[in-house]
Amino acid sequence: RCHICHLFKAITPTARADTRKITGLGELLSMDAFGPFHVPAMATGWTHVLGCHDVGAGIVDGIGTKEPNGKIAAAYLNDVCEIYATVFKVRVKAVQFDNATIFLCAEVTAVLVKWNVTRHQTVEYMHWQLRIERDWRWMQHDAATMCAFAILSKGYYIHACLHSLDLRSRLLPKIGETKSMYELATGIKTDQSSFRIFGSKMYGTLLPEKRKQMGLDKADARAIHGVYIGNCREQPSWKLVTPGKIHTFGAGVIDEVSTLAKAPKAGEADESYVALSGSQVRNGKDVFTYEGALVETLPKELGVPSTGARVPDVVVPALTLAQARPRRNGQLLATAAQSQVAVASAPPRLQAAVVASELTTPA
Image 1 (cartoon, rainbow, N blue to C red):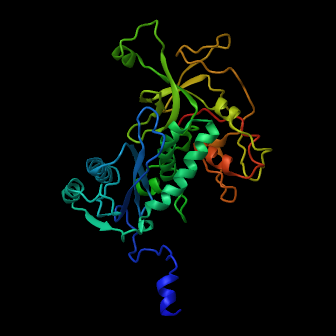
Image 2: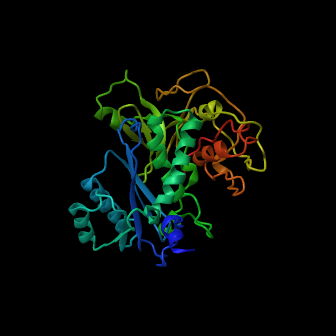
């Protein structure tokens, strides 16, 4: 091209791969803030997602936050460094930021000095050089699909974003591997049956110690009703959100049957996308702990379990999505929680047989 063409007809450059070969865990983290969302998250008021991506290992982490600032960014960076030191048993060597002011501050620099971490920057206005920028794209798609599948308001959107980040890191295998990215980094395999369908009704069981702490007596409810929004990383428990607070429970009833029954149907199911399993399916009337122990079963003659949780007394044909095999062509993800993402985004032939899910818990 001539001189004038180069000046006035410049073509936007493609995102080239980094010249550095990053393969080790903690060798380079990509950190960024995503938002704001117009509708704050239920119970927390979060409007942003603050996350980081391990370029070498492919692990993604994220937290919800209100308008981020230097103190919030520094606290999150410090938490990430602690996680790498205690969980992954490695030191974070370098972190790459964009040119946002929340990262170019004394608080973040102090954390970098504390953990002896190198700072890397992207070229100005070229934010696509951050690896986590690509994660934001599928995170948005997953979260929107989860909310649409469970027929939830936009107040659950950020909670769905965080659930998507957690699922992909802990369950999806790395390219060319059979193990998940989290398992490769820690040696700990995550049981996919511990996850539930996002947005399902949940009744968290209040144990006697908790009831005593809350000042409840025998006339009060024995469970808290809310919506399942994911699993805790710090402890084996589920997260339940109410309009005022996020709770964690190690035992409870999660009614996935009703969620699947009311989900928008797109047509007949195609067996080429779904692998059926012969496992039994429970209809959401049994109270289980996170570890899989059966606490109690609802008597047939009663409509309310002794936990105080009201669950529909229905038994429907079962498609055990929790044990479905991943099929790349159909993009059916390999957990009940992820299946809603794949089912809603799959071709129209897939959906009608998705009418129930197994209510089991991890070993």
